[in-house]
Length: 355
Image (tube, rainbow, N blue to C red; front, side, top):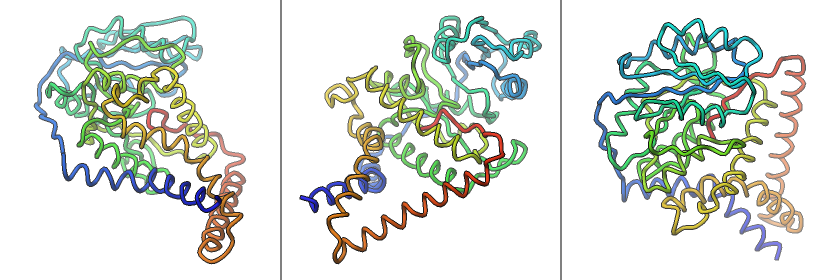
């Protein structure tokens, strides 16, 4: 029995991180679905929800005002969600620049802020963005070009992680940056086959008529909104030319909080949209199962792999056990070392729109 549990656990973990990408490579080679892009200029509503963002909102607004898109074809909506740090005063300085400000006096959460903004939006295309990241000037054009294809209902931009300030866009090469490049590779392949299972929260676009009000407790709006669009029979594609830039976190505790939030959001997604688990309802059932659900289960299979290996300590199984023990020991030692190094450093924010 221990052998059966061990090999099933090993196979599951291998499939989640190696087997599924290999399957996508083969699938893409056999059945690629190109997007028929065409550059055009629909009326766009760029929506940003903000709570207490006084330190960053000025730079974000200036960044949006510098986008290479006709000023008469885009509106910038700042949905203020009960700010208490002066964010509202900072935003109002730009009222003469064409911003639309929706001010809610009570903090009700990002989803409520998005719902209010979408009620007021006039654009036929909605572009969602977060405050912290900077958007490439051509990003909106690149996003809407994909929507010219009638099969596309949503377009995800690319989050480009950088290691220094926004003045020098040099890609991060550390572990977080490496994992994010791996994640983008998977999303790009999913998009080339049919649809990616989610979007980059820092930058994505949808048709206005594809939006439905969000439950106000929504954690992952950038997964729930795109998956609703998939269930409508439309594609969600990935556009690497539409870039948003963010700085890599140097604080492992912050990265851990982001991971916990993402996992909680995925469980919540299943509660809000149980039909995603029905292959006859979900057009990307295999991708959703392989990309999202498998990762929720990986910790349990890793535990099963280690515990079953404890009863198999001869030959090849002993080698596997030693490798696991060494891996967990190094991970634990590394976590302690980094925590000690960062003990007196303030926490650094990390991307929250990318799973």
